[in-house]
Image 1 (cartoon, rainbow, N blue to C red):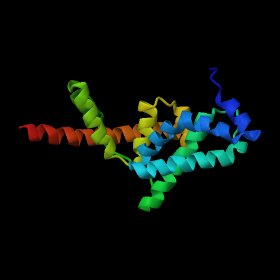
Image 2 (image 1 turned 90 degrees about the vertical axis):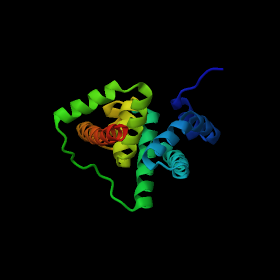
Image 3 (image 1 turned 180 degrees about the horizontal axis):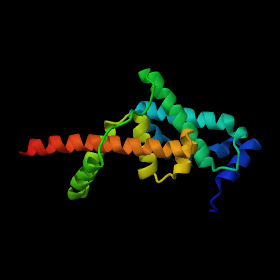
Image 4 (image 1 turned 120 degrees about the horizontal axis):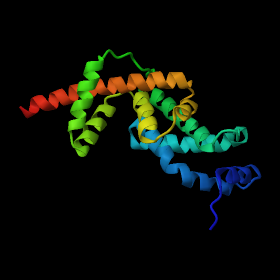
Length: 191
């Protein structure tokens, strides 16, 4: 069976074949849920945000500009929907704080992490990521785990590329600070 492109399905949907949208849902459903989960950290909220995102995308499909990739356009909808749901749920303003951490502390933490086996590194990284704000965690995961480029992260989040770089840098430093505390506590508990 020949694999069709996103653009093919979009054209079909815009011609009136609403059934073609199920192909896009099938293709991006897991990824939409995954991104929502990174931000919301609750399964039910993430499922609802992903579903809401598909509805928004379907209703706005005529405004999709085919100069960009559908995936990037859609993931911006998912990101914005998830952040909106988070703000409503927690009634908070999501922002990234400046973190003061020296280069020597960064190096020491990276060296300590490098000495751990892969399983322990993953465990501590996950614990550290959970301590970050949802938007910080989402930025780091999009860039480092999902391999989105800085440009793609910018499009998804609505930030400029330079702003994405700054926020990823700050989030990474904050993660390293969290890891420093986690590893310090772990080493003390082992004594």
